[in-house]
Length: 288
Image (cartoon, rainbow, N blue to C red; front, side):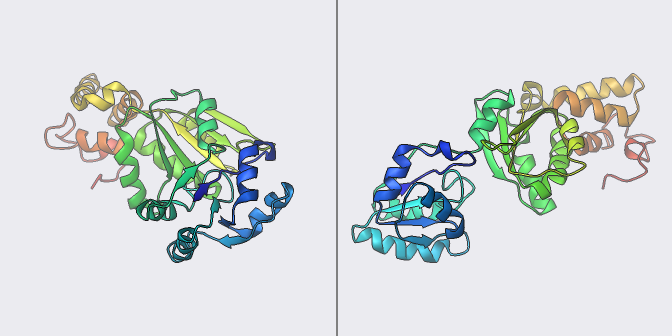
């Protein structure tokens, strides 16, 4: 039997009695980092044998764990914090156990994104949990665009040293949506910063510490369902004499359309600014 056992993301009182019992009764415990897990296990008097199971040895170590499970041993899988498989190692082992018809059971328990969603003040359902965005600019842009039109609340994990540029990228591609940056869930310095993405981006200028969850409003019904609506609105604003920069800012805010997409529309051949528009949005830079 493979047990998926959540562990506290902050306050040790979040450890459930069932989780402690399963860990104390398992034949062995597979953990992401033995150095991180040992203090927690000692705190609850758990002394079972440990094996390291992390992203660098996930596939190879899964073989030896499967062999032991096939012999009838029980394994409890834990990560450094939270629920294994949620942006932590676990999926590969779970998938292979299911394929081998080895029983798998997951205990309910701590995870950072659910409390963050609840305190964000944004609609709690439907939602999409994305996890960590890719590091590369191109991959990250493709990832953001893949969810930009969804009318669901979006949830991302964010590393503190990448927070400023990732939030700025989301602001650029999603528009200035309502959001909440929740820091240090279940820890002493837990904090929720709520407001438009632009204000959250500004708050990160001096850096940020701790584990971060970013919750972002889903696309509006207008943006998700009728591309022609924002295009018509852009034409109206341009005809009313607004500058290209003002049109881009307004459409991005009202329809949660990326600024680059609005710029491309404005200066394409049939766009409202196609004639005599040498400088997109008066920036002096080409959109191509």
